[in-house]
Image (tube, rainbow, N blue to C red; front, side):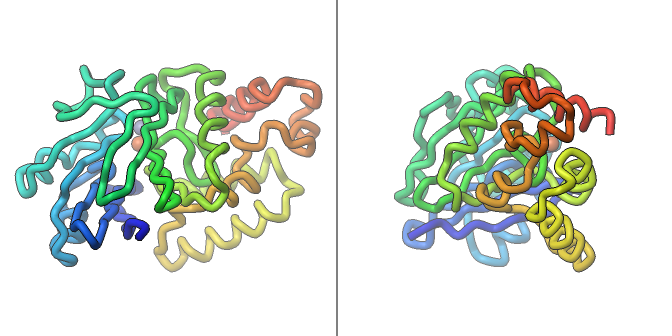
Length: 255
Ligand code: ZN
Ligand code: FE
């Protein structure tokens, strides 16, 4: 049975996720931007966290951790590369490490770029990947620490997952990301349709996260550096994909 996954809006535009296995009762909380909304969702369903998974060290992804653990002690898992600047970890993980949750085996994918120690968690049976601020809905995280080449390699790994994988990313930035995406990929009908869907969802206060990997590959300019129309639009038709990605990221930073 796939895990049941809840999207929990936190703070102003962050998301936490709760992944629950009904058979075992095991429940993972992925990122803890603030405790209140997560505790409320757990209480409402009678779920108790068995694992806390952190994607990266920025405190908008864990500032609710102490309050969550005070209510429900649970082992905290995060990247060994960032063990020195994450909250205390009970288990420090790296590329390829496996985490058992409710009979499902999640795999750690290192996705440096936004930060050097950023990781994603892939749940193959549930067809879900928790990407934090690496691959995001219609966007990707800013390169605070890593290089464009590192982020491109990270996004390439995520893009290789099955297309029906749902992408559970860390922020509701889709609408502003769409405004930028339209400037580099203006002729893409799938992007235009997604921008409309996004506007309708946000007008009703609905999250636009998670998305699917298929949707991201069709519309997210940061995954589309090989697309001829985008290259033409940018005037760099012969550049390597990593250089096209770097140009798109630089333009987004100035946008
Ligand atoms: Zn971040
Ligand atoms: Fe963030």
